[in-house]
Structure formats: structure tokens, C-alpha cells
Image (cartoon, chains in turn red, orange):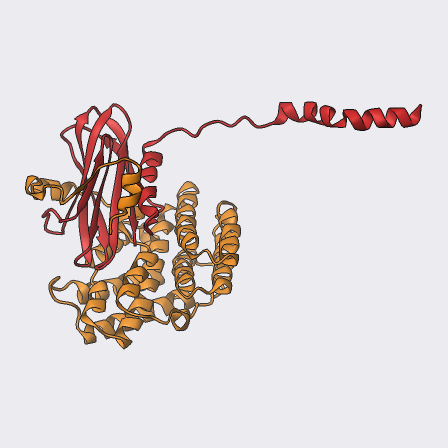
Length: 149
Length: 268
């Protein structure tokens, strides 16, 4: 009798354990989409090309016709990408970079709806200004991150 | 410079040149409206060292001369030293010295314990060890910056906001110390141009001036402020001209002396 009970327990063990585990199994929940996560997603494309993404970020609220500026300090010879994203109801944003006298800096730009990026090779060391502009849409949260190599 | 493959693979459009003719220069009101966000406005030592790597061939192993932490109960000194250690971590990464990174990470955690922020950064300490074990230098750079930012966040949360700027000052001063020492011995106009960052020093001084009187009058903080003012005079020159060798030498001397003061405490 006892050996039979033992065999039965062994046979049933996986099912019993599974039943015990089921209620405690964590339910995966998607992380909330934030302007930062979208900006990091865009910056990730540049990371594939050797760019290191800074941990710091600039976030806030962006309005149509009210561009925002942040100061950054760059090193000559380094290559940079400034990536930004805004959440709905923003439809379209742009990123531009200016030198310390406020003149637009030659570089490359990426734009796709509410995500945009500006890339440049710093010609001189010193401070620059990065502008984030909403060109279509309504007041929305935005975030800017940057990467360098 | 553009990771075209990555962008094009994602089916996105890249606009080269971007019709700059359409971008108007900033007006005075816009220049006045510019904000400074410490975690973005102040570059990491890693960025600084990346720029040096492109123009010179530093022997980072030789440059990695970590400062030992003197026993102190002065929280300002501890915060400044924490910044120095973060910069040392970046130097160890450049030197690809895994043990050096681990030792520096341990020192950061020890100092964090004294400043009551160790709970926040203990996990980071473990990650630093793991990445150092696997020689993942790129991840280590990110981890060091994240550690520094978490320390600052924890300081702000426990109402030690005033110490945050001191961590930044410590890291920047150590970065200048190492960079200027190397450039002094291997002078080229291109390398010297990297040291010309007056806006960063201006930012640090402006933040120090906002500290409460007691902390602002701490002998070490006062000493740092004076040193930064001297450094600003040295680097606030014509952007078109690189710093000359004598100026680099003076900057190296000032920064080295400031780092020694942080490690040893202000002289009474």
C-alpha cells in the first residue's frame, strides 16, 4: 500500500507543484510609455553605432510656438546626437542645435512625427544650445536625451 | 558619424543638412530663456576622456592614481570626495583596470554609507563589480553616471540637496586635474582647446553661490570656490585661440592642488 501511495505522490507531484505555483506567478505588465522611454528608444538606434547614451535627461511640457532651449557643453571632436520625443497630442517636433552665439550649427537631422534628433560633430569645445520645438499638435510632455562618441 | 543603417533599417527618414537656411539664429530673449539642467548641461568625465582619446594616446594606467579617502566627518568634504571617486572610476575604465574599477566602486559605497545614501547605490555597486568582472567598459561608463545620479537623487530626497553640487564639483575638478596633467606633458593646440570650458565653471560657481551661508563658508568649500574662480580666469579666453602651454600648466597646478585639498581636507 505504502509503495503505491509513494508512486502516486511522485506522479502527481508536478501537477500539485504547478497548482501551487500558478497563483504566485507574476503577471507581466507593460512598462508605461513615457516621453523618456520614446526618446531613449530613438537614442538606442544611435547606440548601435557606438554612441553612449547619457543617463541624464531633460523633460517638461512643450507647447506649439513656444520652443524650449537647454545649454549643453561639448568637446571638440566628439560626435553627438540629441534625441527627443513627445507624447500625444504632440504630432510633430524638431530638434536644432545652436552655437554659443546662437547661430544654427550645421549637422544632420532626423524627424519622424513626435520624435526628432539632431546630430553634429563639435567643431569647438564650449557651450551650445539645443532647441526643442513643437511644430504640430497641442501641449504635451517631452523629453530630451543625448548620446556621444 | 550617422548610424544610417540603424535608422534606415527602422524605416525612418534622415534629413542631412536639414535646410539650415530655414533655421533662424536665436534672438536675445531666447538666449535668456535657456535653462541649465545639471544632469545634461554638465558633461561626464567619460565624455571629456573620449575627446582626449581622439587627439592623444594617454596612458590611462599611469594617469590612474586614485586618491585615498581621509577619515572625515565633514559632509561637504565627503560629497566632494564622492565626485572625485566617480571621476576616478571613469579613469579606471579608460585604463581598462577591472580591479581598479571594483576598488573605486567599493570606496564609493563606503562613502555613500557615511552619507546615508548607501541603500540606494548598493545595487549599483554590485553591477559595477559584475561589469568590471566581464570587462564591459561601455556598460561601466553608463553605470558610473547612473550611480552618480542616484547618489544625487538620494541626497535630494533626504534634504541634502546642498551636497549635490559638491559631488559635481568634485568630479569636474578631478577630470580637469587628470586631463590638464596629461595635456601639460603632451601639449598640442587641439588638446588644449578641450580644456576651454568656461560655461561649466561658471555654472559650478553660480551653484556654489546659492549654498546656505554655513556651507558656503566651510573652509574647503571656500577654497574650492577660489580655485574655480582662478580656473575660470585661465580658460575664459578667446574661443578661436587654444590655451597656451603656460595656461595649461597653471590650470593643471590649480586642479591638482584642489583635488589634494578635497582628499586631505582644508588647511586650518
